[in-house]
Length: 346
Image (cartoon, rainbow, N blue to C red; front, side):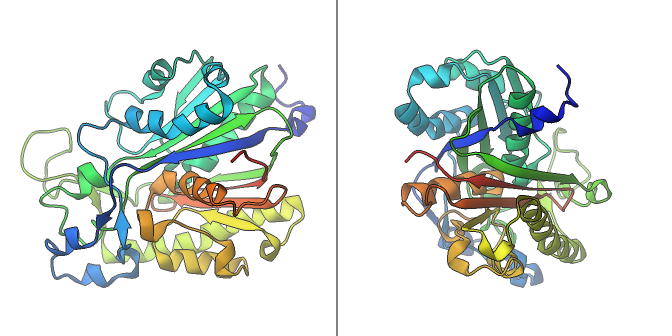
């Protein structure tokens, strides 16, 4: 196979369907306010809390979440179609086993024998777009016909409700959920273009700390969590404001569409201010930039597929319309955008 063959770049690959799962009942913000501490960071726009979020329970694994997220796809397309998936890509925010991802176990649970199984970690909040690009590349360059991509956010309940963490400013913002996308080598709902960019210079700006000298795998005091300083929060906010519109408009330029003419714009959803700034940058009205922030909080990588599924089930995504997805990851070390001519099943 000649991977430089320009004909490969014209093979149509479609995002034919999406589905999602949210664990348990909504958790109100009052759960966190009883533990909240008086600190300046709580006033930062990056940490303004949603009205609700969902928390995965201790005995619910990432694979359990995937199985429940994929169930609607099985209902719509049949167990046989899903069992013959050629490419399986997973992104899990908090792997159940730190030594390995969940791809092989997902395949076992869903009775699949895919030829390609990859657990993708570095895409962060942009992982759904990242996996779309990886799946499209594999489908175009091989005889593979179908791909299943899975984004699982499962750290809100286990991590942000810890006794030393739940009083922090950032604790009420994340929520848990899982989103799935089915890709097929056809022209039913074609991926029009994808842009993925890595920014290595920002790779060290997000820290995972136990609040002590202890490394997260060592025994001792302190509970692990992503840590922030005010100066780093300001830098991340500035980068996020810039990166998401940049990659989104790069895709718009290549497909010959102005940002203001996009039918539906779906992004990751760290906070309300990012959401407002991003649709303003594309000159889009707020109603064309749906989100699930107030119902689900920051869903990290699952934010895009969960919002897509919510809009699709509500009948607000018109077949033939252009859906543009865009997100940035971590402290800005990765960003991606993808445009699809929508035609997914309901």
